[in-house]
Length: 317
Length: 113
Ligand SMILES: Cc1cc2nc3c(=O)[nH]c(=O)nc-3n(C[C@H](O)[C@H](O)[C@H](O)COP(=O)(O)OP(=O)(O)OC[C@H]3O[C@@H](n4cnc5c(N)ncnc54)[C@H](O)[C@@H]3O)c2cc1C
Image (cartoon, rainbow over all chains, first blue to last red; front, side, top):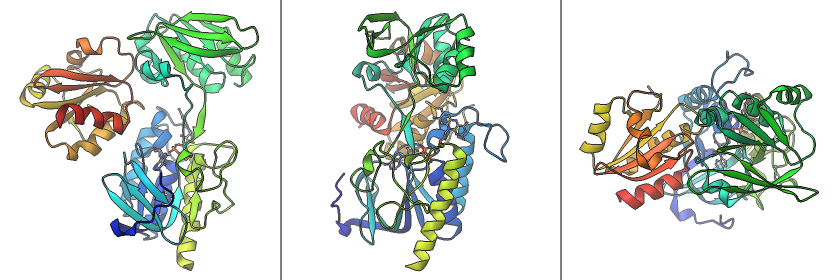
């Protein structure tokens, strides 16, 4: 990323607002801005819908009976487009300039886009352990989605890594397929709600290995073992496992904006009440910013606030 | 049937036609799940840039899926979707689980450009 990028000779399109990220926060901003007749472009480096598409069942989005996250995402996308908002997905951002009156974003193969206002809605991504073997064996035993891949492990021994609500809930759910699920956790206690811990402890197929650090995933063509060490004694344990599900939380996806807008020590974007960032004309909405509760509803609320603040700013300029 | 804008491959005959009547094929066999949707979206998005490639999806639980599930190249795969690339009816590459746009494009460029 070149923050000094200012080659406006190659400008192909001007917009009022560019929204970076097409999850619920970004799509909502697009709906509000499009409806208010501001020329808006949403650029997403991945798939529109963001983390919403990771949810098979969303039961807590008001006004919508239980449905899949993918279905809500599809409707939100259609809504934004119906109000004239343009959406570019699977787009690689080559350069970005957020300072000054005119911001610019260059997308590989698509050109340069400029705007007066930018809304960052880049959300979060699942945290990984960062091991080379984890990456190599993804889809060959290592997985991040129990609902997607659970049935590949019918009658096999598997591992679930993590100690929060999702890790324990998913570990219990995986006992519908697996013959044994070993939960490996980094601390000597769980962060999950006590009733979820109880549920896991009651299940005869669930076993626990606490206070461990994962060292490696072993296997040539597919996963065979997970190697971990006890954090105080250093004792090495090799757990035979055909599958390993990693549920160790989410991190804000703000690396692309580091050095451009102010972040806190966790890499979350700092905003004020109007969701303005440290850079004039740049707002942030959704899971990428400092906040306590991360839900579709809170992302949607952020998207509408950022859009309305952007509209106010555009009307004043 | 999968809810995508891609061509669907739903029977053994359609599978044979797909790989034998097109020189270059990218076939994604999955469900409407979180790891599969991004791959369908990538195929829909990059499709127009690859005129010489036929893009198709296939339901992992559908009648034609055994054609993919039994391929030697996917043995050991334990993550959806199974994405298989064919040239002149032969498998040239196969991937398991979610892929990003760069991974997909690098395979398309390597074999079909
Ligand atoms: C497994 C799971 C289940 C969940 N279930 C529920 C639930 O049932 N109910 C509920 O309310 N919430 C649920 N959540 C939480 C909810 O999905 C998130 O809080 C919400 O999606 C956050 O929205 P967002 O728009 O801020 O970010 P995201 O949804 O993360 O979207 C961000 C988008 O930005 C894109 N992006 C990233 N970086 C860039 C960049 N540099 N430039 C351009 N684009 C970029 C990404 O590709 C992504 O599409 C769940 C989350 C997960 C992971």
